[in-house]
Image 1 (cartoon, rainbow, N blue to C red):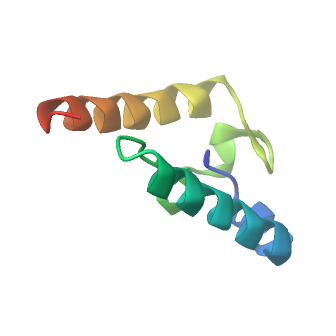
Image 2 (image 1 turned 180 degrees about the vertical axis):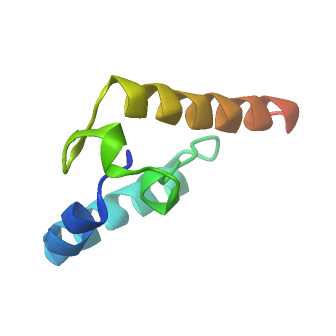
Length: 80
C-alpha cells in the first residue's frame, strides 16, 4: 500500500481492505520471496505530500520512493 491521508484510511471500505489483506497474505504464502511494504504505517507524511487524500504529489512520491528504496536495500543486505 502506498501512503494515504488519515481521512482516506478512516473512510476506506473495511470489506475491501479485508479482501486486499487476504489477497496479500495468499500471495505471500504462495511466493516465499515476496515481501509486502505497508505505506499506510508510515507516519511522517503530511497533507503537503498529497495531491488529494488518496494520491501522493511529486514531493510525497519522492519521499515514498526513499522509503521503498531503503526497504529494498535492506532486503538485498539480508539476501532476499
